Amino acid sequence: MIYNIINLEERFKRDIERLFDLFKSDGDQLVYDHSQLETDDMITIEFHYHINYSLIFVQAKVLNRMDTITFEHDRTISLETDEQIRKVVKQGISYVWIQILEHLTGKKHDWGILTGIRPTKLYHRLSRKLPYDEVNRTLARDYLLKPNKIALLREIVQRQLQVIPDLYQIDEEVSLYIGIPFCPTKCAYCTFPAYAITGRNGTVEDFLKGLEYEIEQIGKWLKNSGRKVTTIYFGGGTPTSIEADQLDHLFQQLVRWIDLQSVREITVEAGRPDTITNDKIDVLNRWNVDRMSINPQTFTQETLNVIGRHHTVEETIEKFHLARQMNVNNINMDLIIGLPGETLKELQYSLEQIHQLQPESLTIHTMAFKRASYLTKNKEEFEITDPEEIQRMMDYATTWTKKNDYQPYYLYRQKNMLGNLENIGYSREGKESLYNILIMEEKQTIIGLGSGAVSKLIAPKSDTVIRFPNPKEPRAYIETVKESTMKKIKQLNQIFHS
Ligand code: SF4
Image (cartoon, rainbow, N blue to C red; front, side):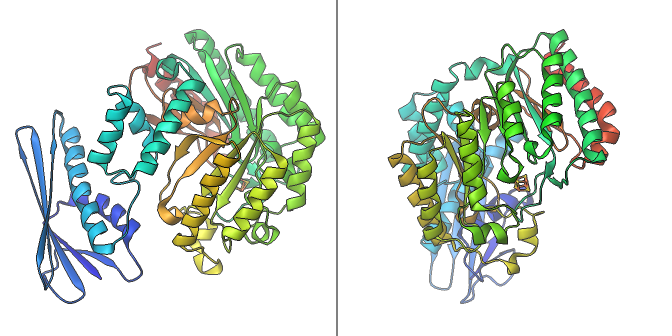
């Protein structure tokens, strides 16, 4: 079917295309202002909107050979800037468009008009002004969210506030993200900064020197400006790809320059089990790392081979037991729903294995086709799971986690996710990752150090997020680290008026 949109301003086209992508079937197409209005395989949708004092009124007529159906919606505007007004008009148009798409396709979109990454942020914002029941009504009425998603958001937001009671006042502190951009091999779906590492080499040593410089400078800035650090997260890449003595030296530099007294949590991603050794766990324990991730993604060996994760399922299990024997008592495991060739059967098997291991937290991602990944560029090489099966897998995971006492505590969505679902972090009570909540809800500045680390600078009492990315590629990072650290500090001074 061809959907012919007429009379829609250029600035709203991207939004309706995003929603269209969620509903379209094979062969469906969106065109604009096609002169031929009605054919057997074309439906024309004509948009109009006008603003009258404090009200915007949106109307869309759906015209086909048989009849004309009109969809209408109005919403209040109490905002002043052009950008704020544009946002409300966009919401009105999206609202009408979703209703048309649901009517024409018979499909439902549980997230309503929300296409953004962080729906929990909206829930937080509304719940600071309104009682919970009113928030829920607003989400259903103005955003067309279905009850299952509203309940999920409410559960997550309430949990976050239990875990970080000062979440709304934590903006004077900062968290640190330390990016180590190396991995043993690159996974097919990955777009993170992850450069192949083969033991000890010059690039790694040079990179670590650059990182130490950044730690020193940011440490001095923290001290001079009197800022406390809430959490520290080592990600990448896989931080445990570097050698144990390199990791140890990095921690020495961290405690040398940064006061860790206020730090509530340190996490180290050890995502690839093939990088974990006794010596490295020993280092993490010595430096009181609170939380560690060992990521199976799946417990089906054929899938691991297909996606280029050159480790075995046995290795994941073995390294998990090793960490346990060495008294690591907060382990997260990641699974991905919808890896190539996988169905509900493989997910059930993975969850059986998780049940055997009993990690403290479990993050369930849905496969996303990121533009720059090998998988997206070479889709024809892979067997892609269909959206209905993905939905069944997600439903199974939701029921399974509830039954096994894993509660959701953070959530985010990505573009081009299979089945348009979400990624959800679950944990046992008291084992939530504070950093994950802080980065997702954007309630404080996160200073990114290392290759590919993106700083998110948020002035106290502000909602504006300024992104400051470090170069992804280690060589470029090494060459620019001095200059870019100074720029970052300048921006930090502006944000915090120090
Ligand atoms: S282990 Fe993680 S960071 Fe490394 S290549 Fe795979 S997905 Fe990317």
